[in-house]
Image 1: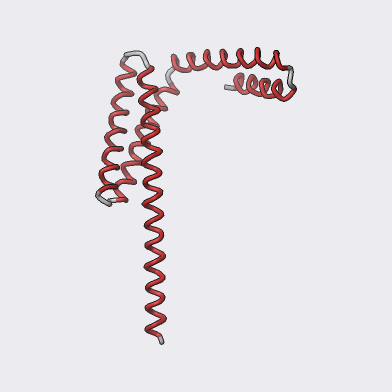
Image 2 (image 1 turned 45 degrees about the vertical axis):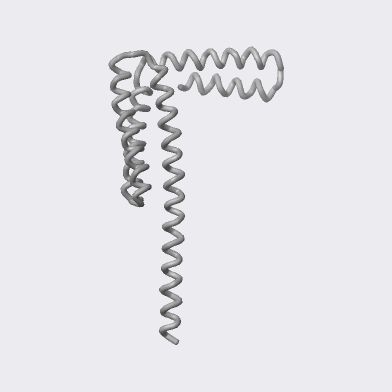
Length: 149
């Protein structure tokens, strides 16, 4: 009787661990897909930038992120999931470095501020034409947050 209970307990633990590993693998594939999309967005952003030393610095981090992505992809195919997760995290760190560089660069701040002002002006024109209270409220909130930024 004790052996039967022990076998059932061991079997349930094995099934529990197997289910957890399967879910982790699925999450890893989702993380890899999200990373691929983030890399594509970064590539589009980098292509919009004018040629300069800044773009070259960003490209270096971008190439490192792409390399980490490819490494993670090959590690998943080799079923080395823990290493793959580490490379995915490293790729995200390189993408975060790119984001920091862009956010802290004064020329980009001015350019995006100008675009935001243009969008707010377009929204003002649309709201003034419609005269909806809800739209006016949302526009005023956008102006408020623009001033705070």
